[in-house]
Image (cartoon, rainbow, N blue to C red):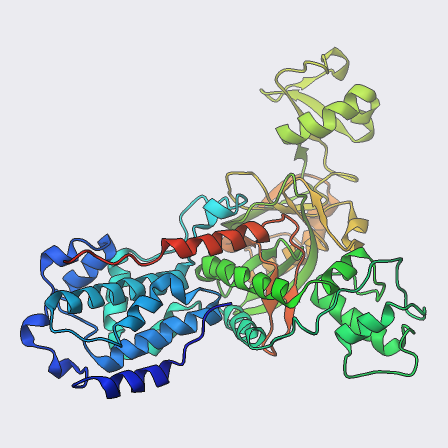
Length: 528
């Protein structure tokens, strides 16, 4: 994918061919400072960096310069292209030395540009997420230190570059596990061995089919049998494990979704991991030790306490045309026995056609018609082909779309987590059914965990709040961070990668954007 270089051999060969070693003490004193005119031709952050460095050259040491090249080369394991940081041009400076001040200045400026850009990309991602993934709906900017703080971090890290690059990477273990898995897969050449499994009818355990051998070669290549076409128990166990790792129903039945996952090539999987390393860089500093995390693509909700999962459940998320947004907020309160005010989009697209066909829909679903002042209207007096300023509100109780509880947090799209009467949909393999909100399986169990952590003073037992049927809001004493995130690959400490379906079809767009960002690389200053 990326060009590999024999870095240390290059360094030794180049040093042996030089007339004198490239050490800091060998650089003439009058070349150790950058004139302000040279710095002013560089990007603003580079200018501020050299102001902090008192306009001194910072890469005159051969050892430090080589360490920088090593770290830039290692960015390939982060899914970043080292060529985007001008690595070829920086290597050229190892082959030729000059006593021309502009040569030293240009080398230093280019190296600093690459250094600062690499640290920034590791800390926050190479791309702006809102520009490549439209479901980003962050109301407040992602956590980022100002450029002066970034420059100070970079300046202080010059003498320990390996540690500095490590610290710039997200500290979340999930990032490091995924990075290690990516590095491991990059070293393997599996393309020559990979063959697509043909399509066909469902494959069930116990059946005999010519395609079973191809499945066995994919999942159990080391375990061959005398009956290669028989879908036996060993293979069915392997298929279940594969399905579980890919957010599929672990039923050992090989249907279209499982077949599609099996037929993802090694290159496809490498690209999938690469783009999710970028997503983790976007979100890593939003992760907290105590938080509720919604995995949109995996359709799961987890509650984290002290960096450990204490509760996890399945979810139903927004369908492709009404996606669940990516955002971070704070859970502030719960609504028990909630009513449901139908959002305008759902009213227009879903409810009005139903009501026009049958006015009895309102009564069956216990919905009231209100004007914008909250006054109830007679449904028979509303022109349902031109209803004007009305709202629909569903009473609390059985069949309410929000179930028994809603988990609220401020956000510009009025989405929330909630219970649901549609429990059977949690059994589905793909669970993108909602209009943007997140339906949570066993939502009351999650609420109980959150209440336990908050220890709300004077609170009533949850079952009592539910039994009286009244709609009540219960505020949290301490808000709980909630993050709605989207990624389609994750790895565990053993290097096992779990792939999720790209329910919103965003992976290809992000991959193209990463490839196109190569052209936004380091630009040399004009000093001659």
